[in-house]
Image (cartoon, rainbow, N blue to C red; front, side, top):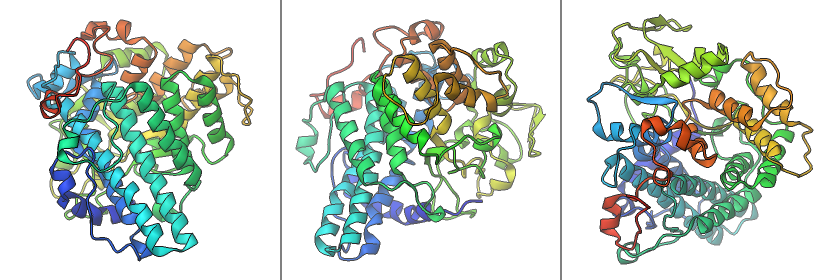
Length: 494
């Protein structure tokens, strides 16, 4: 069981954050006064802790998240029961419009994260002014870098989801918020890259174990590499991923199943995880996120081994694994009903769906919350080292011309990932083989849909699900947001 200082601090700050007016009005840009004593160094991390708490936002990283980022892909189906949650069915079948509530929750969820990050960013100069101590000042700037990385991550998801959105980095009145205009994707990426570059310059390479899960210099590098990946800036992708690889700080766990275990969280394969924990309790502060719970086996028993049953592996994904003669990765990724897990938990034959997302499986021994509690201690893996290796390989095969320090070739990087999966080495790996490796390795981790979009493969891969080229590359700007701010322009064909 994990006991993280980071999430313990967050449990205090989540109460503070939820009481502020900036979350009770439009959250995109308002920065509240928290009444902090800026002359005390122990308070520096508190605003950043609240920003971390925002990452557990339901809209940003629970039900709407799995819908937009995974259920829309060819890896997953809606799951649950046919009649359950029509808005999610709309996402699965590409029949949504601007009134879909899940899409609006994504907008508000990520702008809520932006708001919390903005608040933390603007608090740090106040500590510098009051403390006037070089060590404390440096720590305040480091914490500001963490908040900038969180803001950059939120904006990266916003622009992937909606294309052009407003950039808000300061305090605005309600009237100003209601009139703000969208920035172009070029402007958004410039803003994101600036935040990450500044974060890289001040963040440490690592933290002590008690602070596991905090954003490091390498987290910001990984995020920046992914931002460049989506802009097809291959030299930058290769350079950043090479720096991560050559640091020697990261490696693949030998056991693929361990990567998604509670014991495997925040390990040497992790660059960015969203923290979730019950803190070993059955009641109390809700420092957990229900990401795993909404994907847990529906109709299973006992109560601590069941969830809503959404985001089930598709037959397309199952067939894909079979066509590659894969055994190791599907053994973890595919959780079948009528089976017993290696940890001894039964997935009963009367569960609603034939197969579930095994990457969020959490053994019953951990699920002690006073209601269900399945997966409440399961972190969300945002960026893993295998993703770094595959981004590096893709950049090289697409023509990156930078000099690297790691010495890895395209084949070397891909084959490290394949070796753990029990597959034979590739020689002269092609782009398609690398993309296939991404699918096999990162399935059901909210990566596939936008991989299909960025590579231009969505039209062919998702046509049978209802994907329309020239429309579904982005989601509609929510009608509720346009009603609040008429200056927002709707995306094409919505």
